[in-house]
Image (cartoon, rainbow, N blue to C red; front, side):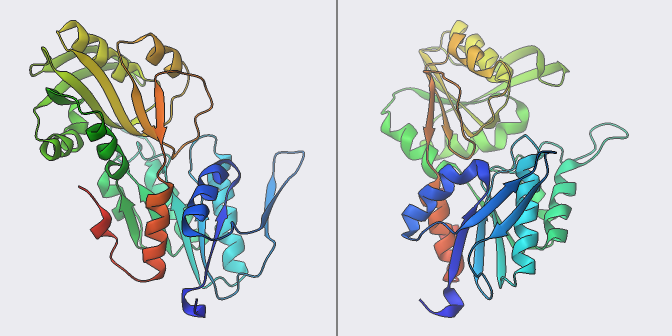
Length: 312
């Protein structure tokens, strides 16, 4: 491979499982890097091989806790100071994405702040997947390659060979995503209208559409505490649905999420492996996006089109 196209892939601590699969798909070794942790909680990054004049791809999802974001920032800074030619942040899950606007007075816009932190650290390109809102791409002053988990989720849904499918959105905000799935699969769309008592607490929910005798698939971008998606599943099952499944890009699954999913009417819930899932829940299934990210990295290095690999 010519020097122009020479690249290296490195990983943060908690996304190593995915970076190793990406490297396996690319047929290259994972770059050598040491993360030194100190007793007071600080840590330092050191590359253990020369990256001068090389294109580096730094794989790290910025899911909680904040150490994951800080690791990525230090990786970018170290790469910049080690004279890397191009610094590409591969962020399968972009944290703080739900803080994308001022929805009430005197609040922060966390997604914009994180974008600014990455830019100031020295990133040249961001590769991410299924942002909570597409317009977050505009928060960056560098190129953003925005991938879609539909590339792995849709083939799996089709492999189930279900009849009388109905796609559902757990809230009005996700209707665009759900409508795209429904159009691709050629099936009807159902919406859920919910009101929240406070953050992560659903007060009430109504179904807009008919789910009787349908195999319902709820589509979302992430599942956090699973309150919304399990409530929607229970309501749809009570309304006469044959079965209810769910698929989402990011497996946040915090707090009581696993217990809620296990006790709900959901047959299964399918995620990608953008975030590691360590809790035990028989209904959770994860599909790997490693090949998709590997192909994107290959195309970035070769200056080829990325949009042509999208299904929808």
